[in-house]
Length: 574
Image 1 (cartoon, rainbow, N blue to C red):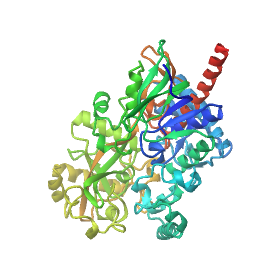
Image 2 (cartoon, rainbow, N blue to C red):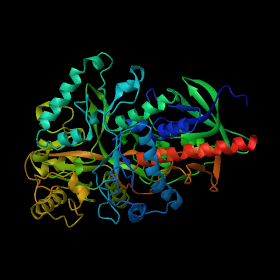
Image 3 (cartoon, helix red, strand yellow):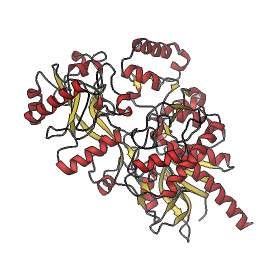
Image 4 (cartoon, rainbow, N blue to C red):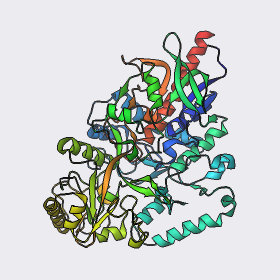
């Protein structure tokens, strides 16, 4: 083939995995191209919480974590067969990736966030790593507004960027939270220079901080980024090795050579209903996903399968409970709202359509989603389930996109929300009639929860009885911060869907991030990282950042393997 242009490495997708693969490849002396089909770069990662789960990271010195402790914990949580060599490669390479990222100038800090299975052997509360607030205008005004913006749920009033400390202060209405909100608003409007450039807050927080800081380094190394550019197919040679890509931009197709490697980092397939139906035991609907709408449709996975690639762990998503509300100002359109922590607050309970509980509601959001799938397969009465709560909950906490009354008083709730998206009644009996749940079963469930609120012990599912649950409870509720009596009218209910943060499964890769064919052999020149590849964790979500941590780690691993491959090819040809 006569190539019109060529690069040493072509990276498909501009999220965390792609950014790291490009950054490390550039530092390894490669000429790199990143292609992104969206109009903005940063991928799902830029719109996320931006946390990396990195065991044994050593950021704060030696505090007792170790390779052995991490593997013990993972062994105690993973419930399906996984590639042990790939799992160990993650535990070994993740700290190396972090040290490299820090050496480029990206600021990092450990967060006190419990592992999602805090009672399992080897669990800790310091393996999650974040990037502090980043000044987005350091990317340059031509790029500052072109990085994918975070969802409204990560911003106060849909406008003001929040870091994690601010988020928790506002979410829990802790002491001084109004002062925190006032400071955020004032800081935004006093930044008159930025207001002349864009409505966007120059403070990049959470996922925007991670991607902003990383892309500052990517751009500094001369990596080329092309937006509105999609992968159409992989180009292979006579031996089946990948040598390039066919791309398209506004309908124009053209080939690009990848001399040493193609890294697929284009996310999962959660927005492809055909692939969901093919892989998931309970497919759910694309529109319940909380990732960028129509973003991750599995095109790179499909292209790789076309050249013989195999897949793994595709029956699982990175689950998270979500709920749907009309978009403000455009009620014919909808927004998806996460309810990850709302479902485990005191003065509430979650039931299936039989009116009974099926999970510790305060557990990790992925565990919650797995329980929804399990209950749906067993009872046929889930997906959606129902979050039921009383006026005490309504006053203090959000229920998905329904903000607490301190933010959105009853009279400010749009009329078309009531009894369509959010249900309200003066009694539990009336509420059950509105939403079609069996009255006696729901009343019995609530009566038991009210007993548990007095004793502080949930003998059914252990709600509020571990460190992770309690982190998101309310200390005002005693003796259990996650359980409070559901007894003050009016009563409310919202339907909860099994949403996701992407797909757990994808292309099967080895410990060097090389994509494997059906026989388990590497396809020459083809690599994958992030949700484009199967997670090293199989069916589990070990801790906050368990998507981005492996994404960046295997992007780093792929770049190192490509550099080694390039050196070998040069030696063979010279």
